[in-house]
Image: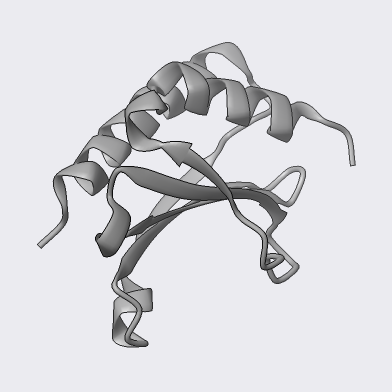
Length: 110
């Protein structure tokens, strides 16, 4: 059963995604949620936001033990993520922040 935080994250990502599609014709993010970490014994859910044009990826991880904190990383679709994730208090996350991350990170030239 998804956590309240995961549901909120999905809602915020949907809102940001819709705005990105309206404002940027060259960015068409693909948002995915994975619970496969749980199958490996890690009590966490992950969201990836991908840009096929730039091959960039934003990874967001919610750990069950610390749902008030999310871990995130700006990565690449074709490379394994580095071990270093940044942290953000979950209550600081907003659709505006996700929109900013997508618009800035995915607009950069390679």
